[in-house]
Image 1 (tube, rainbow, N blue to C red):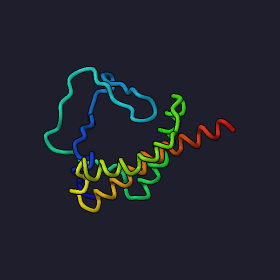
Image 2: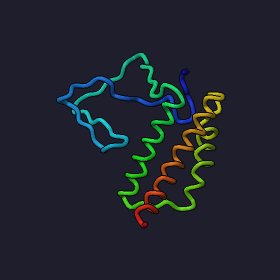
Image 3: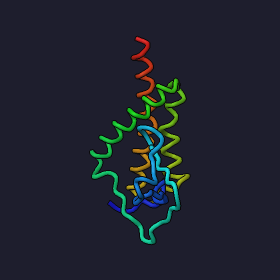
Image 4: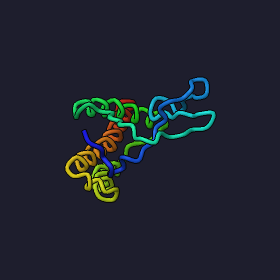
Length: 135
């Protein structure tokens, strides 16, 4: 792939090297974070991060992550409402135009669409979980 600079991507910083006795993970099963006891510095050069091999790999992870996110919201007592259907067009518009994903060309628009679908799908799964629980 190529570097995506817009649409909410390209400005992330991840801790890559650390002493295990000076770090711990927090946050649970989804979007856990690393807490470091001590100073943190950055590399001068960029590290290429390619979290997905291709679109099928992305879709496989999307299914897994949206299920985890829906389960987390379900356990917190959150509900799916009809207004959650507005997430899909809003998320696409925000990533493609407000966050300038369109400047990455066709890949930026595809990313905006897939991200919007991701946001919408986790709420649809939440609605199904609540419906299955009530049966």
